[in-house]
Amino acid sequence: MTMKKIFMYALLCLFPCFVNAQDMRPNERHWKKNVEKIRVMSYNILNGFDWGKDLDREARLVEWVKAQDPEILGLQELCGFTQEKLSKLAARWGHPYAVIVKEDGYPVGITSKKPIDLKEKIAGKIGHGLLHVQTYGFDVLVTHLNPSNTVKRNEEAKMIVDYIKEHHLDHCLLMGDMNSHSPMDADYMEAHSYRLTAKYGGAGSPNLLDGEIDYSVISHYLSVPLIDLCRIFVAPDKRVSFPTPVLMGQSKHKDVRLKSSERLDYIFASPSVAKLVVDGFIFNEGETEYLSDHFPIAVDLILEHDAQK
Image (cartoon, rainbow, N blue to C red; front, side):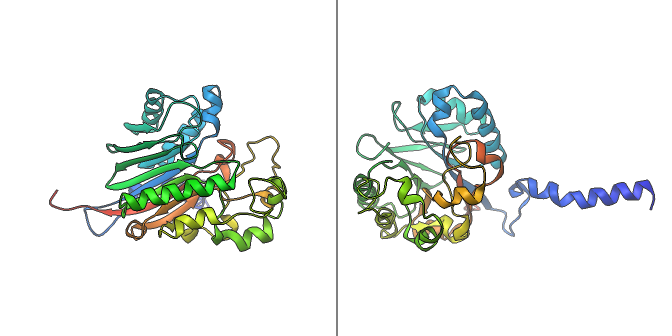
């Protein structure tokens, strides 16, 4: 075999690696011209990059988001952020529109490629806030529930459910760090994440229900009904969104870390929106292991536009 043929053979062998490393959405096709795929993502960014001091982690996270190219991005823990600062950050990953729920504590926010119509900002009653906007034709809600008390989380989840029902949000997405566990994950968690109850403080801990994991918070959402999108596409043993090994106290051995790992981050959708979803992801391997203490999650939706518009 000549050197030229050897070189060409090597390139062909490597080609699948290059393909897998790329986001192929721009090259995906549909038989209708008026159809597009959009990505909706949720990400807890860990104390707003240490209240703006960790510029290295911020830069690396921005580059990762740019590579994923989401159309809508819900954010939690925007510590130290103002509306102006969030708008500037969003512009770095190609989003000209952004809204933050408040400018103190641990705010939530949202950025988008298309205009955002602000509907409601609720701060002080629901965890770290509830933000309701409209973009891409959806009602989108971003929240972050109480991190330390399951009774309060239940109250907050009920308030969100009441808000969805009272405002007749029948075409909505709800996303964020719920600090809660899904009954859909219970069997796997009980068998594999058996160190969780100890991590939460054991019997008497306000984070537990009589010393056990409380699955009722997420059940409020499921009863609306809202559809837990990542559950459909991600296998039980891959449904981990916290913690990452960026935290110094976490083992770098994945099998050790899994014994106290959990899914706290969710994207829910009303049934009408869930029908549009074709994929779901929890990005819990590789580069995202060192961008935050939470892993980002995302779903892909297919939108069909009026051909006359």
